Length: 238
Image (tube, rainbow, N blue to C red; front, top):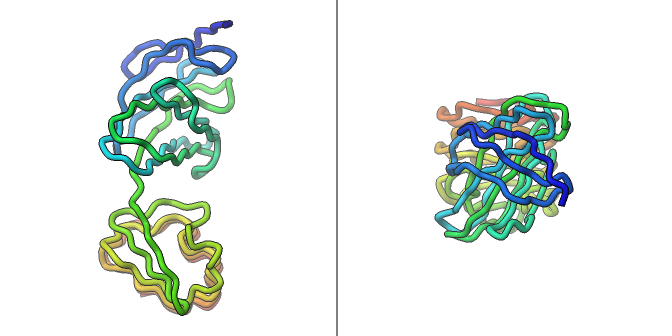
């Protein structure tokens, strides 16, 4: 195998060797903690930084970057270095985002880089666990059961039923309404946003044409871009 040493350096100062054909020969990784922001530092164009992660609980996890104005790429591997997933721009603003079911106690590796092989610099990388969501739809009432932060969606689990949704209620202590959670629910007329919510994601209610009023809890400190974009019937926000 043709090995190219990229001289990519971790924040701990350890070099990584990466195979030029995309297969990993050997590498050194640094641990990354759940819910904490860790910087990936790319000192040489084309370099890849690797992180190791062992989940304490089985479940769904999301790996993503928060680079500003640059396209990033992520690879997720199992303990045997089999590639599980890769992604370049499912996150916000051309950042990678990988969503995967992981097993408690198993070793995983995350490789990250700039998509443009000439770029160098640092960008934040984050791993989050995803709160389990159950939902039912009956007589136009969507009941969402979730405790903690709702994940950010491209398409929410109830998206195919969006035109049948008229009211949304929550069961559980939800603290965040995820990105695009109720986007394009054109017949949604009312939603009960719980007092426990502190964040409303981007485009959460985008294109909800029939929504007439919304009460934002006093504890909400963040409302994402376009959260109520194109809500043409919305006449009051309190």
